[in-house]
Image 1 (cartoon, rainbow, N blue to C red):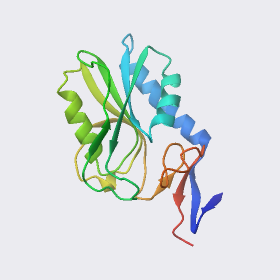
Image 2 (cartoon, helix red, strand yellow):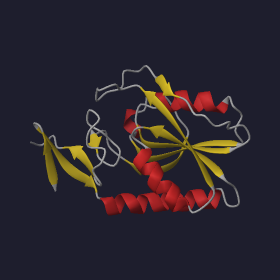
Image 3 (spheres, one colour):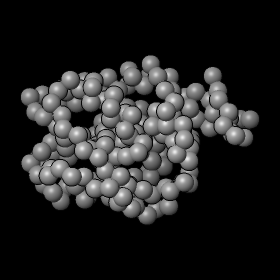
Image 4 (cartoon, rainbow, N blue to C red):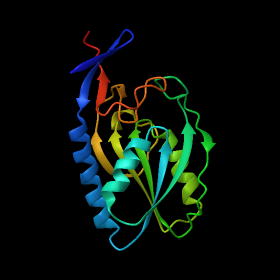
Length: 180
């Protein structure tokens, strides 16, 4: 199945059922690793809010939730390379088990910035959970412990991923169809 947005065509990459299966697999790993503990989920806005919502319900354990908003893209499809903190967390993370929740990791710049910033607050543990990982785009190393799926270097929309702030509400994930 494909959709057309303006002059661009997008082809379905992951169905909502495949996404939910991936979310459940991640939740099982996290539950196993944090059995008997509570965790603080830090959702990276805006893109990770859909994934975070589904993941926290699938975890079926004690969780706290906070949000951070960073930007390195603006309205572009490629990262500018400069990370800007637009909204900081409001929770004291000292001594807590913290999971940074991100929908996709590509260059690694944004997550490296956030990880380095949060580790200074001395959490009991700090790990990264990513639904999607574009390892081929990595320019900065980041310790992503939980990865739902590795994906090729393609422009993706849906399930929180946007095209100029639109299409986040699509239940499936689509990739730009460059064959047309």
